[in-house]
Image 1 (cartoon, rainbow, N blue to C red):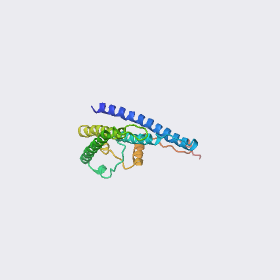
Image 2 (cartoon, rainbow, N blue to C red):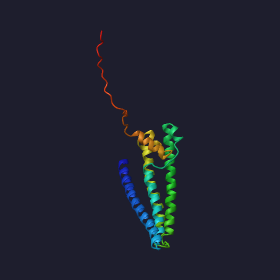
Image 3 (cartoon, one colour):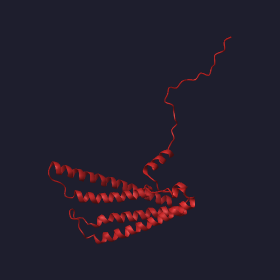
Image 4 (cartoon, helix red, strand yellow):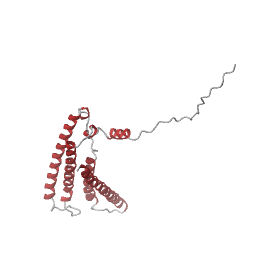
Length: 205
């Protein structure tokens, strides 16, 4: 069951990665193109600012979903890392249940806002403002699915002590630990290699 959920979530977040890259490219084209048109031709794209702002919000929320699945969000593990295994598991379950509740609040609020503003048109593009608030619905649903999978795995699957601490103090520490866990290259001296002659000349009388 967990393997199937992992495959589904991996494919979903990979699709979000690709879509986020597309959104970023569109944002760059719109913003840079608008600057060029404004300074070179004294004109511009009226929809550039509005579309870029919407894409930026969607891009941020999609990135949050990807980081949540990869446990890439920063946190404080100064206390949890010093607890015994049972304490780590209890803290992780409490954290996941709390995040599930917060994700539910986000989903509920975003859904209400999307319904209220669905018939409201954006001032420039004329698109539904509900599309803007739908990004919160996407984040809420995706976060709940990922957190529910993590919670079930914590409760019913075997996990290591390192997996029970799903946060890092900083990106530098995480990168350093990842590098230390990688392949260890042998250390070679940079000086010239001198062949050692074990033969000893015979002592002369």
